[in-house]
Length: 184
Image 1: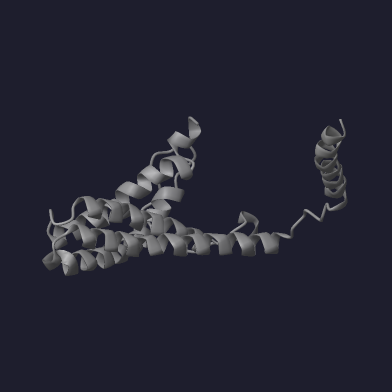
Image 2: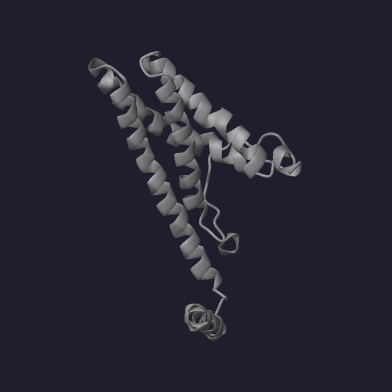
């Protein structure tokens, strides 16, 4: 009986102390809009940088899958696709995805411009960067599937179409309050 009491008493006392301390440790939970804006923007940027490093990983993965004579073309293709995706997402992509009227199908074909307001909770520039690196990652995944199967310039044309038109339109259907977001 005493062994049972010894076994139960330590966890029971720990639980009681833990429950008592949780109410005493409540801190201020309200955060100013400026602090939220700064940390949300920082989170978008840090996550965007991590995704950007994924592009280097995909380039190394593709370089390992091809013959040694094709490695330079694969690396040039990955650098080029990232550059093309960045330009096309700035020109058309972001506004195609987020310029959709509620329940609509397609946004506007205009270049992105920063219109950040503190009430949005984050910088539009950091959101643009975050979405752009995911767009480039999508093109990079397709690049790996077509390694040594397509010439460089036709692939760059495909990268421009995918990153500037196809990916942003489909992205906007769900994340840009398009028709897919409307149906749940």
